Amino acid sequence: MKLWLTLFFSILCAAAFSQENEVTGIVFNKDTKARIAKVNVQNITSGKAVYNTFKGEFNIAAKPGDVLVFSKPDLYSDTVKVINYTALAVYMRPKAIPLQEVTIRDSFLTPQRRLANTQREYSKIYGSLNNADLLSISPAGFGFSMDALYNAFSKSGRNAEKLRGIIDAEYRQSIIDYRFNKAFVQGVTHLEEPRLTDFMQKYRPGYYLVTTAGDYDFISYIRTNLKRYLRRPNAYQLAPLPPVKWDTVSK
Image (cartoon, rainbow, N blue to C red; front, side, top):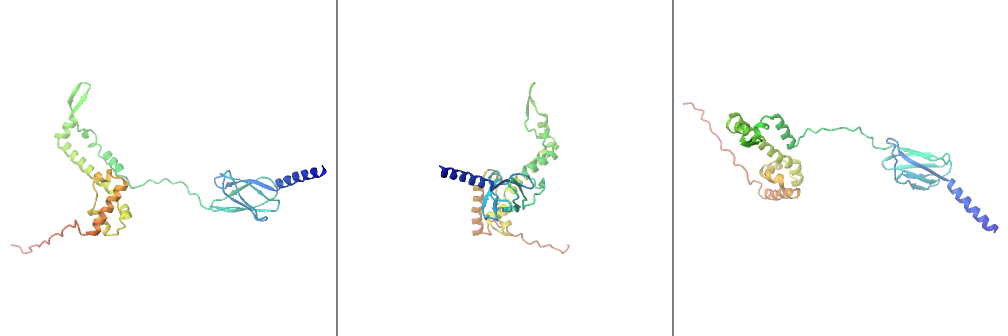
């Protein structure tokens, strides 16, 4: 009986001793004060090492006088000497310097945004003059649209229509340029100048293809034409202009 009591108290003492020799704590980010997980906690005095939990908490066997080293690849290591068994709060400093948030406003406008800006600048031709319906419906019944009549028969109305046509045509070309750009085409073809420009001029896609084809089909279009270009680089070449002779003899 005495033997069992002795053994029981020995186990309790050992458990109490082991608990007293454990140091606990939490690891924080020094800048943001957020908890840090997956930090390696090593007792360099005893050689034991553990990782803290996803909550930033750690528990490692140590005693007063032991030295703990906290390390993680993206953080500066920190060293703490154990004084007592009070829970530790360890603050680790990030290696990367946090930059102040900067709002970047791009100067490169998409074709849609450029068209919207143009429509605002030429609000007159895209306003009432843009009403192409000859007949108008009102609570009083059917009638002729004055804006449509003005647009159809007046000189300024016809000029506005021509200007709208020019702007719309330019918009379609800008849509093609936006997608069929040099950086993208070079990434697909690996052509260098001046062959890159020559290829893009000869095999420029149409507006319908650019606006309807998916990425796979569009890249296939470029690669198919690249094979044609490499087989016949001089195809679609413009003939040189004939020399012009000036008659300097005055009659």
